[in-house]
Amino acid sequence: SILSEAYLSIRSNLAFSTDHGVPRSLMITSTRPAEGKSTTSLATAIVLSRTGKKVLLVDGDMRSPSVHEFAGVANTQGLSNFLSGENDWASLVVKAKSGSFSVLPAGPVPPNAAELLSGDRMNLLMSELVSKFDHVVVDAPPILGIADAPLLSRSVEGCVLVIEAEGVAVRGIKASLERLHAVHARVLGAVLTKLKAHQATYGYGYGYSYGYGQSEEK
Image 1 (cartoon, one colour):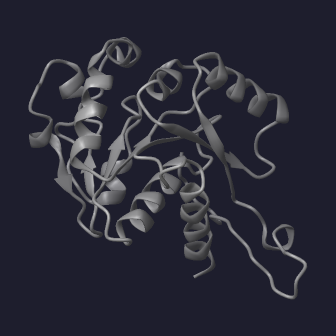
Image 2 (tube, rainbow, N blue to C red):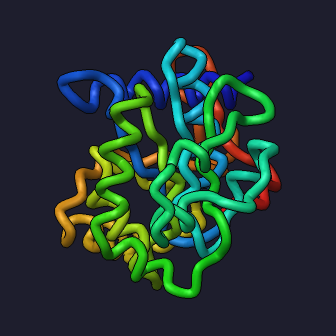
């Protein structure tokens, strides 16, 4: 489908983002909710796993988890458990119901997500995960308003910003990028979502559209 081709293009572009190909650890975030970041995180994990790589999708949005719903797994335990002191991270990882990738759900919603991410355990976890998986994709919370995404960016190799076409003011996008740059995050690029077909036509005799229709994604 056209949407699948779009995500394959994203995978190809990520392969040129570092000197060793697709980043081993990657965070996907957005300026605000409902821009399509969770869908993009899921699709990125799927296209990477189809290359034969061992891929883990981490739900880093502990305030409003959704990855477990898309992957068809339970959310009884997950990232918040590890950050709260559970050391056996492998017992928290499950296989997605459909697809050849694994999932680390967000786990129970903690009262202090930013505080959990402020410690060293996220860095410890990511170092363990990249030693066991070829690629780790983190679905992070939106940037503006909360500290979680900038904190998560310290633990990954690169970040991708999801932007809803005609949905966010330019000043909001600039503010998001400034927050990421303030913590020295490596911004690899942006994914434009919910783009209308007539806005996404290239000029070489073919059309190419990329959007979500009536998606309810964050």
